[in-house]
Amino acid sequence: MQIIVTDRFGIEAGIQIQIAYVVISIHDPSRPSANVPRQANLRDVLVLSFHDADPAVYATEEGPPDVQEMTSEQAVKVWDFVDRYRSEVEAIVVHCEGGFSRSPAVAAAIAEGLGLDHRRFLRNYMPNQHVYHTMLDAFDARQEKQG
Image (cartoon, rainbow, N blue to C red; front, side, top):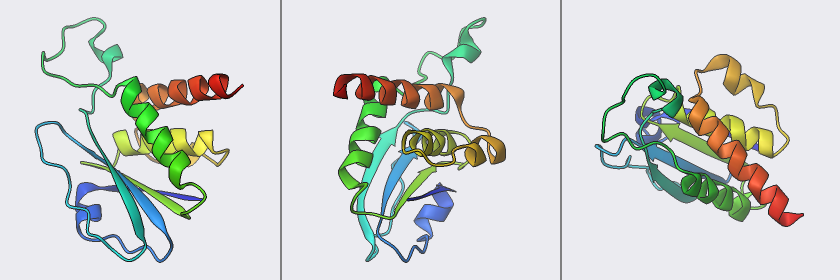
């Protein structure tokens, strides 16, 4: 399984992938969702909306009142999506607005959950730690449920 990270521009430009893939599309709540071109190998798109925010940053100061952080429910949706398509596709593309914080955090967690090398996302990007840990917590909760 390949996990690919990109930004809004890259996904809207029509990233060229020659194998079956799905897209996890993350956008800011104040912006419309990205226009993901329908291509022959694209199987489905999961659209999520949350800010690039980490509540730990606001631990000592009050953050903006309208910040929407990634929720555990959204993380569960991602894992449900991955589980639904993991035997049908060869790649998961994750994008956010800038492609350097939210999408690498989701990609790193997915890679870790699937037993793939997740360290490249941690090394080469600045993953949002709240998003990363929310994804891992949801994965762990799923594993406990499944026994």
